[in-house]
Image (tube, rainbow, N blue to C red; front, side, top):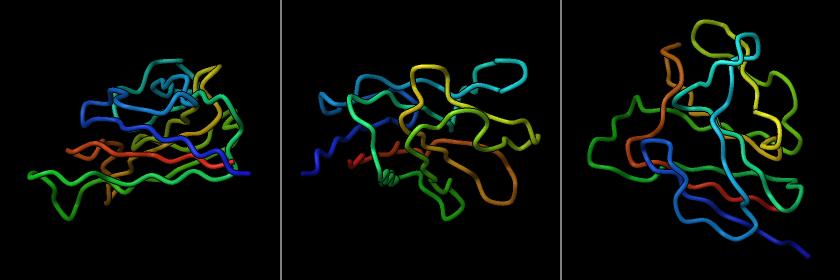
Length: 124
């Protein structure tokens, strides 16, 4: 039996409405410096281990065709799993490694959130 969960993240990277199975969200870290990546890469803590993660942008008047493309990862996103525009490895902080969402901007311009934010669904 599947127990889906959902979360909404606004355009500023704040966790919004979410199901009780979503226990939290954190910004990803630079793997070497441990510096927080302010926008565009997030790890999630869930009450279950997902086998599928789906994310989608939310429409906004300031959307452009060059907005970020959302990529997902899960389960157990441990260690470096993507890079920023400078080639630095990124990882989810400890405790927030059940799933991840990355907003990658085209043309190598780095990481960013869609202006309207995004929603993410988790399935076991």
